[in-house]
Length: 186
Image (tube, rainbow, N blue to C red; front, side, top):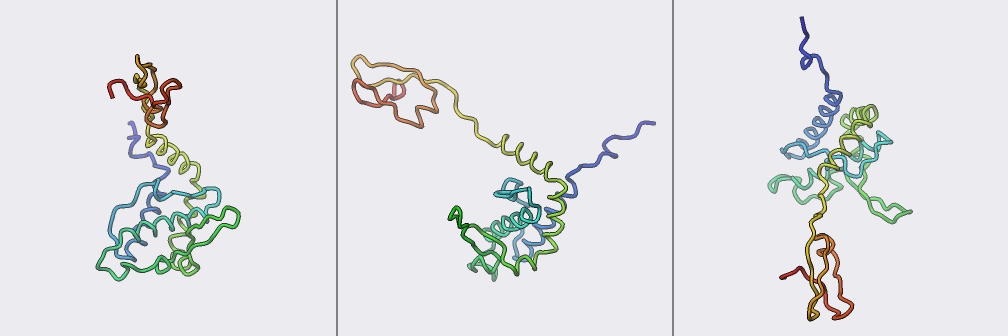
């Protein structure tokens, strides 16, 4: 008798998704926000996977940023500063960049979210990295590779052939009439 392969297969990221959903729903419920879990690219923005604890903190920071944007107008959280959500800023002395970090009380408040999230990130960082890479590649906009004819204002005009994306990004000037090349007929 053949075993059904679909019933016996296990998704290696199932537990990770459960932990991520738990983090989202726990944090969003605390601030009276009810919306779907954001996409992986948003949750893992600026996340460095080599340090699982720091990665988990950054995911929580991203969740809190998303929650702050989704807080309802008639909740007590509306118009409160980021510190009320457990976020504070620091300046990186090397790059002079200002970044969000979890305040100490937020780390304590969300430890039940941070610990399992860090554990899943540590054990599945390779899979997470691959998912983010594939998502980035599929969402990346392909440049317009079509070619167009462009003419200058010379009489008779000089005509050149260019890729559309080049013509739209930079201005190409004719060395005779000193006028830009424009799409033929444009």
